[in-house]
Image (tube, rainbow, N blue to C red; front, side, top):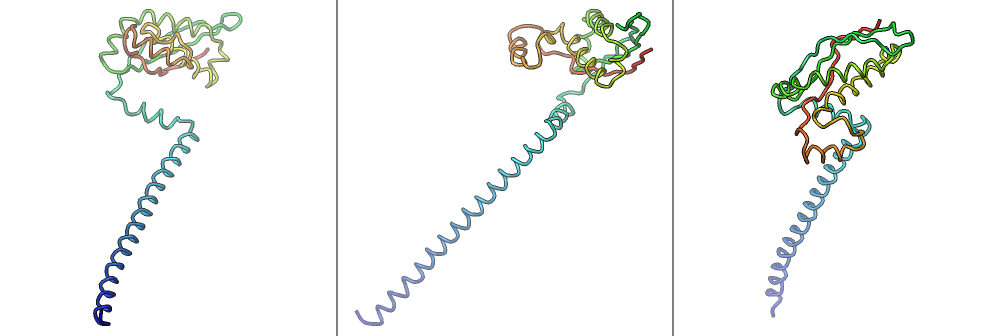
Length: 192
């Protein structure tokens, strides 16, 4: 081969090598970019989960409650005047309660059980002392207990909180379907 043809063959190999090198470099850059994007996504998810854990999960629970499938309905009960469990029996509480139910149809369902629910609530309040009810923690515990009592006719309220799996199984296997009462609100609270 002549020197000219060897030089032509060498020139043809250079562009092919440079194209291969360019493709390899672009591939490496693309892999790094995808890896960096994936790492960013993973880290941001982990930070969001850590922030939610710091909040105690309360933000997630309240956002779930704040976005119900349908607008909730409220069922106010008549004010209740109850003798408290204080020594001497001279202390009374006047409590106004409103039940939060899943929707207007559920409100009608709950009304059918109101005598039973009201009686249970009266019994709960009469077991408390004025000292318990005057503390915020006492009011919060009473609201939880009233919610448990209001869900009892619908198959709820009998299990302890850690037995939620059994509660779901019970609802699925019979009972009255979904529990319509989802919250308890106090409209008035007077202890004398």
